Length: 110
Length: 113
Image (cartoon, rainbow over all chains, first blue to last red; front, side, top):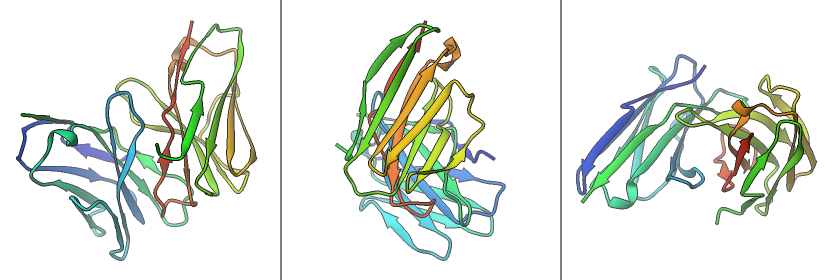
């Protein structure tokens, strides 16, 4: 079942902070975050694994609440380059595949 | 450049045509994926191959036929498509499984007329 992302869209000024949420009804083992700019391929940002292991980006942080099956992506002091659509992808234990959310469109204005 | 290439980048085909999409990864990964991305829709997984073996078919119509001759190459053969099949088709690769990040190719923009 597809995870639900919120908000669907957000507009910020450069330097402001953003939080994007991802929620699933399934018991998750991994949560991935990707960013896709218009006309480009999705790019990996962050992966969070059950048990606390985390791999990702220097300037972006994320959390994974295993009890609530929720993850949040934190973008602090946003830059113009952060604009794009952010997708979370979720995986259950032993799975070969990810199921992606519908995406959150982030627009950063000067 | 992510190490995953796709050709062609754009394709226009009629409903009676047969065409193929190609994906190649230069990352030494074992798993490869086909996704469909339509306007205002999430990434829809189509197929997963792990060590050349198909491990997922997400109820994809038979007019889409995947082929994975080795761990570096993945094809999507298309025949008698419908206009609603028009979309961006993305290939991705990973070490394997949902525990590892996926690297996406630039996609093929397909238009079915």
